Amino acid sequence: MRLLIIGCGAIGQNLAKVIDTMDEVELFYMTDKNEARAQQCVKEYRKAKFISNTDESIRAHLKHLDLVVEAASQDAVAHYVPFILGFGKDVLVMSVGAFSDDVLREKCFNLAKKKGGRLYVPSGAVCGTDALHAASMDKIDSVELISTKGPKSFKDNPWLKQQGIDVDHLKERTIIYQGPAREAIVHFPKNVNVSATISLLGLGLDKTMVKLICDPMCDCNTHQLVVKGVFGEITAETENVPFPSNPATSYLAALSAIAAIKRIAGNVWIGI
Image (cartoon, rainbow, N blue to C red; front, side):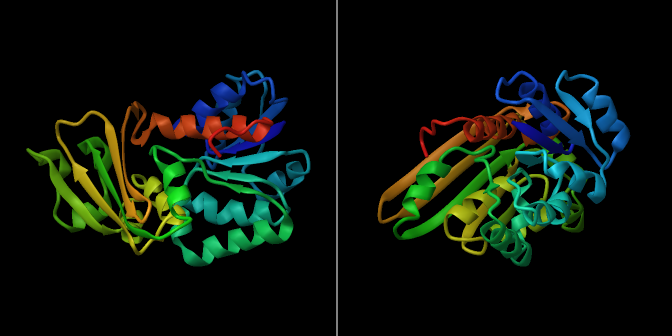
């Protein structure tokens, strides 16, 4: 198996570290808009090679690739994912919040169907997505995601500044957002990718409700998924360890991508 990782941040580097040890992976490429960072990253891994962050360079390597992993940003999804799917290649998307853009989402979904490439979205930093998917086969009444994070996760957020909320000076647990997932993704693009995932699995971006809580005493990222429907009720809570280098990202998000890659490369799927 040959892969390309787009993005050499916390998740991209963690993926590379594990992929480098996988027997199923022959080699993998890394690229980043900061090419110096990508060039430095590949030096740390035995199977890694650098490629330039240009459409021409990526296009030249696509024919040799089995999977492209986006681990960069929502902007990277908008630029690269339609481009890659247009060549019928498989893509795993981490920045799933990009699919809150209806036009982009439908474009990508249609390209995957038309060109034969597969579009993968891992479960990310929340548990219960498998049960939500099963529940969606019948009527779902409500889906709510309640996320609690520390001030570092929301630091320098432009929307919070516009609302006059200074997370560094909060003294107690404070609800900083409550509303539809679509707006949450716009206002907090680095914090609530999981809300896009559960929206796509369930009631959609406008009917999935999100509550964001900033807790000055919190040193973890907690997600509580509450689903109600004809099947009964799901309450799934995940308490995540954040990346030291990126507090807005949970370590479990990277692990979910690793698990997805292992599943894609393998022949046995348990819990499908």
